Length: 136
Image (cartoon, rainbow, N blue to C red; front, side, top):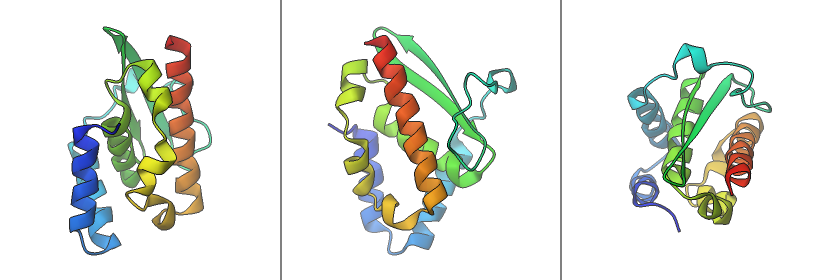
């Protein structure tokens, strides 16, 4: 079910020896993500339940959901890129079919993120799923 891009992240994580390297990998991904336009950083796009400031902006094209995001924390920006690789460009029904917890567990994120970061990822996934429900 996971995209090729997400599978590549899984492969990269298996190749990296320790979590310091994996964190650096996520941070490097964050640095490649363009920032969200400041005009889109509004209450409607803000994700509640995150320790950091997080915004996700969604749009639909040809029946598929796409999003862009941003955060004031570099590691969270990187986590947004991981979620984009998992969900971006899917049809709403396919987004709802993704077992995000299981897919992210393949990366070991649950074991290595703080409770606050894990809750933030969960909040972002809930926002993505909610958006998919609205479009299904």
